[in-house]
Image (cartoon, rainbow, N blue to C red; front, side, top):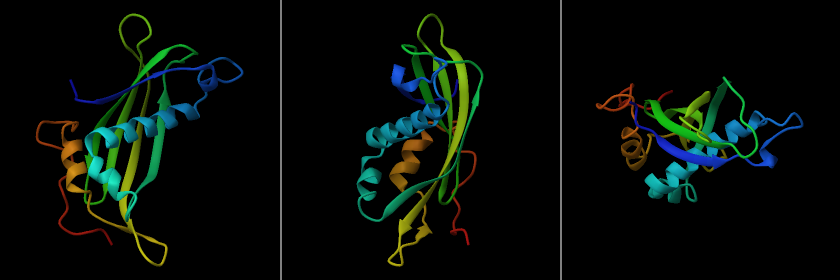
Length: 157
C-alpha cells in the first residue's frame, strides 16, 4: 500500500450546493488544505521561507469524481508524491468517504506545484525543491527508493 499524508474533513452544509451534494470546487480547496497541513507538520522551515523569498506556485490541478459526498459525511483526503524534479512537485490526492463502514474512494486528483523565488523585478524564477521539503515528500513516494523522477542537476531554461 502506498504511503500517504492524511487530512480528515467533516463536510458541512457550507460545502454543499443547492442539490445537496458537495460543490466540486471544494475538492480542490481540500487539496490545498491537505498540502498546507503537510507543509506545516513536515516542512516548517519551508513554510518560514514563504515569508521571505520562496513561492510555491500551483501550476496545475485536477479532480476526477466517482461518487458524491453530502453534508455530515467524513472525508479522508490522502496525499502522496507522484513525481518530483528540479523545481516541480506533483502530488496525488485520493478522497475517501469514511462516514460508515470501510473507506470508499469517491474522487481522485493531482496537483503540480513549482518552487520559485521572487526576484526584484516582480517576477518568479524556478529554484530547486528545498532539501527539507524533498526529504519530507520522499516518505510518501510511490516506491521505497524515492520519487519517480530523479533530482536534476541543472535548472530548467
